[in-house]
Image 1 (cartoon, rainbow, N blue to C red):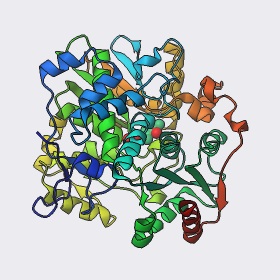
Image 2 (cartoon, rainbow, N blue to C red):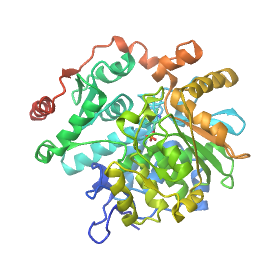
Image 3 (cartoon, protein in one colour):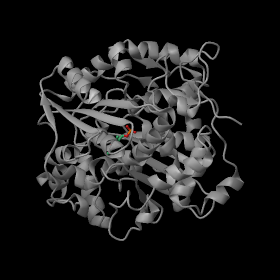
Image 4 (tube, rainbow, N blue to C red):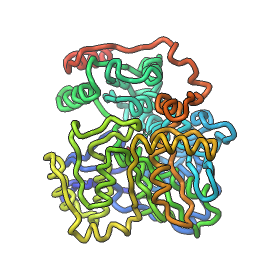
Length: 482
Ligand SMILES: *Cc1c(COP(=O)(O)O)cnc(C)c1O
């Protein structure tokens, strides 16, 4: 059986299906859609029983083998073994076993957090990005190719990408960030990397200016082809696939047998994390509920409550204390809607024609919305005061310090968790990453993992530039030619 990928907007007559490595380095499908497996691999009860005792890396190999069949198994095994090690995911709390990679911490019986943020940048994005770095290096070497990743970041994604790609052969990263607008810790995390293939550009502007430069460069097709410009954005299929693994791991950690069901609560922004949960459930993992939590930017919560998806403009997007969830439009949401509408690409094309024109769509009067409960989602939102209260109560009641995003997940989980079902909240960042709000909530500075103490004092490598597409292009040219 081979695994082929299709586009959510595809017309199967015109768009040939693709293999995993064919879609690995790209972003959107040529028709503007997102790639998904032609069918979801199904995991049998016997397989679940066999997987229960596996280490993270062995489990990752089993799950990812279902999605990747054009990399020889021995090579894939070596790649996951190299990725999921206690050395890479070493920033766990005292008392954790780093070899677990994603330790489960019960706060009370039946209610816990799955620690996904023990990687180098202290956020769950490392779980997938670290694998992506190794997959990119492997596939580029096979093809004798190279790639120049161009991105813009306001913090989390850029640092996760840089730590995943540092020192990788065939890969260069050009990462734009808004000059003077990130925290001292975030700046130090990115700019202190001394690897030759990591290039930081601070633009004298806002995040949106940086993002616009990236778009302008990517729209110059001749430049893009000549300099082999690529991206590692959140719609990359391999990132979603890598995230499916920890739902399996978390499920096994939270249960004693595969007869039980588990609810997962997920702090959400671009819908990438919870989309992986949806896929794990479609594969047959007994997930009873997917509890989706948003912050004040509640475009997704609104959809699950009302059937209306109404992306917001920049002016309507709030800057919150859980900034990695400050989205106006959830890029991975299209993958879920494809399944919701019975995998009919014509329907997705019609809905996203409205979204891409700056509009909204309304499924409230359709059978699709009537069928939504079949997908096991519940949702809720959380605001700054909830975040502070949850950080405080979690600290006082359980002695566990959580970050602002995880606090949003905990708040909504406590409201929406199904009675009698173990509920696991995904921890998407460590509190050390969001010191300011932790100090506001608790009056104390969160502990920082040993390896990151004093990083603000390390020498930094960054090129400061005006907001100029040309200046960025010249910078890329100089470094690629060299
Ligand atoms: C990226 C991120 C999120 C949101 O995840 P999505 O996959 O975009 O839904 C939540 N919390 C943190 C800390 C993040 O970095």
